[in-house]
Length: 219
Image (tube, rainbow, N blue to C red; front, side, top):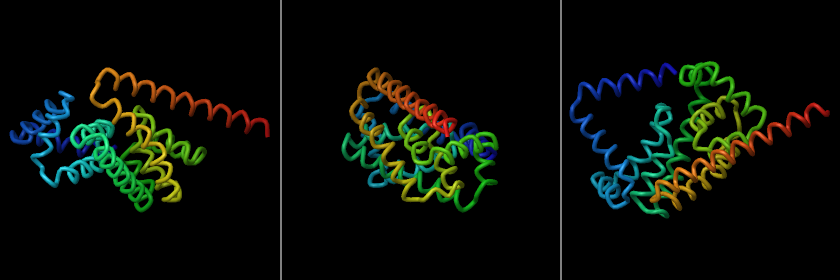
């Protein structure tokens, strides 16, 4: 939490003290808010061959800024580079960000993750990961409303096997990316689709939790 607040404070300082930064952010927001694929693609072209790198780095950086949802960056990739290459780029970005989060959680441990997420949040997510393992990761990746960034850090702390964690990450995020690629240019259908995915994934996971607890009581 302290790290996130420090980064937000730094961004606020740049916003109020660096006019060029403020202008760039305003321009980016206007372009992205338009939802127009040609306009977004044209804006991304200013980065040239570095565009994909900028997006992947952005996905890694947003893990420390929980006010920015990775879904937005996935959409940018799809709208800027098309449904196929954009989806592949988004998957690479999610895998890279997840790997960084996992590695930091595993190497730096509880104290670092608690500073980033807060003690209560870290413990809640850790309890879920310890009990439900890969299913917790899959649901976190699939549901846009859940903190899939927290799950990366905590999976590292919990010492979940890296390849198991990565398989669960890919299994969860690929359907989400496919849905965003299909609905990306239609804002109304996109909102409805995201709500449905969030609702169904949460209900399914809640059902699994209920079944698991009931089974545990019967033993």
